[in-house]
Image (cartoon, rainbow, N blue to C red):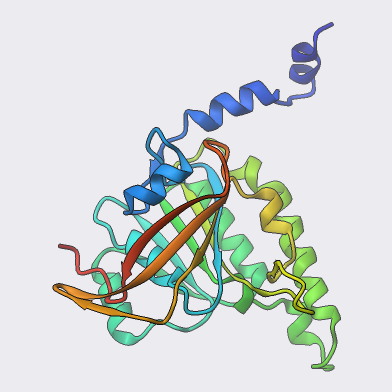
Length: 255
């Protein structure tokens, strides 16, 4: 009996079949040819039917990056705002560009909302911005505000969700992106730490680490800042390739 026969009897998929399915997925362009290329030299971006992550330090341009993708005319997007960071002007702009916006922080509710949206297969692009601003029901019910167990609980819920998420989204047209804050590891020994630990690292198909300084340069048509991206994980190319570009801090106008 061959391995293929055993897997078929178990209703499982071989790595060869999974790889073929993944490589047949289409992509949603990031809007930057340099970034698309380091994800997939044949024409990349965020893969549909897969989980991706955009992580980086605070104020590095992560949210501006994903919001502009949401507002592109060819993209039907759901933006889940966990930070309450949208100004009324930007909210109106995103809605006028066809983006569905939900303000929600409870991780269990986000889990159900995203899964239901994936099942309906109505969105090209779903963004959770950001993981670090979510909380859990256990955290809300805990009267000990100094308890460290709340972070552990969030990591457990996130890990449980992600373990089934890849099989849930596989074959769908939705590209799901988690925006995640990173910060230098405690002790100054190098490396970065993120909310929910390594859960997303293990389960994502594409992972972009972004960085940018606070410096801005005024140019015709808007104000831009350096925006450097390292593709730390991808199934479509060599990892740890870097792209250097500039991101406009002004919201996308649709032109």
